[in-house]
Length: 278
Ligand code: PEP
Ligand code: MN
Image (cartoon, rainbow, N blue to C red; front, side, top):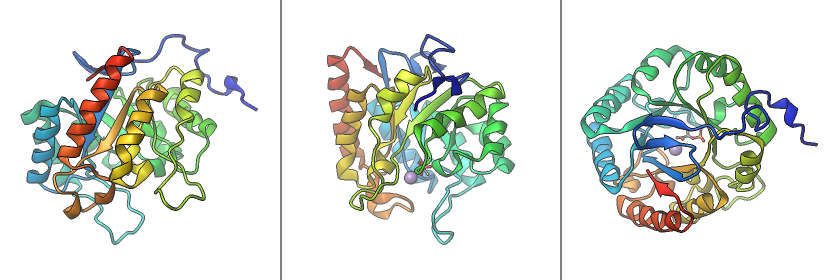
């Protein structure tokens, strides 16, 4: 049974207007008439890689670049990110290409260095119920993107947002990134129903990550179109200049060309439903 009294700070009852996260003139997430496209590689791999993607997505129209310097990996033997070196590259790209940056905070010990570079702090799926971490970012005055845990219910998801809000930070963007089901042919199952449901329950913006949901770049455009049709406030999508050689999540990363094609289609869809993309 759904008890909306559980969500003291995130529910629609507590605040009638949609929360809008504004990063700059014309760069925001959550307004009814906008659909925000965040794009970039899974991980910062090198200066050349990040500058190439950043320049390309910026030219296409993107204002917010995603890329992880600290990567949560299932296997400890996989590439786990460049760490501080990656953050330095992100800081450089941010200034030179004039992009807002979203990057993951994996451990509390890295909070300060991540806060210095990030315009939005990403809390990954695996950390959705790391309450200590949630409370730490709750004390900040910086937007947080909270990804749904892959085995978590919508109720648990919103309660995790409450942990952040209760400490004072109300600038939260929720992200549906697919959940675990019995299906094996996709990496996760995109829970598209979560979008209209969360819109009904909460005033917080919610975006879709079609890349981790699908695990397969060919599915990403369809899931992105489903996201805009479902009422999501945006998408966050993985793009790589050469997915075959990516150190992380290459199979689900779009090429620069396929991203551009998809972006143009989203623009056309947005027009029909009276939204702009930013
Ligand atoms: C990511 O966005 O790169 C990521 C690690 O995603 P998730 O936490 O959803 O697995
Ligand atoms: Mn990834």
